[in-house]
Amino acid sequence: MTARRPMIAGNWKMNGLLADSKALAAGVAAKRKALGGSAPFDILVCPPFPLISTVAEAVSGSGVDVGAQDCHMNVSGAHTGDTSASLLKDAGCSYVIVGHSERRTDHAETDAIVKAKAEAGLAAGLKVIVCIGETLEEREAGKTLDVNKSQLNGSLPTGATAANCIIAYEPVWAIGTGKVATPEQAQEVHAAIRAELKKMIGGEADGMRILYGGSMKPGNAAELMSQGDIDGGLIGGAALKVEDFWGIAAAAM
Ligand code: PEP
Image (tube, rainbow, N blue to C red; front, side, top):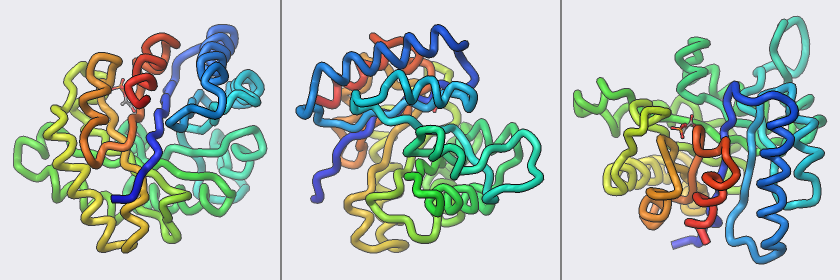
């Protein structure tokens, strides 16, 4: 099996103001800096758009990467309220999350839109985190694997490699609910995603990281990440406190 470096990614969503976000970023940066070159994981924070430059400055030189939570599919133009991938890169991002279930629901983003956004991210030189995941209704109907495979096929950008793309499996019923998938439930889906990736992109699938997201906490992170195909976490609520976020990162050490 290809060794995959864990990724611990914080999705701050629409939380925080300037001062507390700066302090959160600085706190994570200090923890990461203390590990120096020995950090056995990548670590990423994804603040709201207006905080990107501030956060990028606060984590500069620490080894913490900065990502955005979305981008537009076009390079520039008349798209009021949207942000281009190249501006995100310019502002200090090295990653962009696309296809989060909250974007799919709140903004009616289809797989085709998610794919186009991911391709815009790659074209701008960003790495992309492509989110997929089933709803509770779909799980209860026994459609979990089919839904995830279908979203993967529809959302994976052309040109995806292990180096430029990460998949995040986020069961919608586990996001922000405190209901976490069991390690076995998550591993089953992660293994199915990797098998599907293999059909799509061949050997690159072995090195591509697949993150789990959905109520990950310091207390459940180690068990989830001990599963063979779980290569880290995309973390919402627990990414808003340095101690919680770092507690999850510590589980990857
Ligand atoms: C998320 O929104 O990506 C997420 C996983 O949220 P939470 O950790 O709060 O469930």
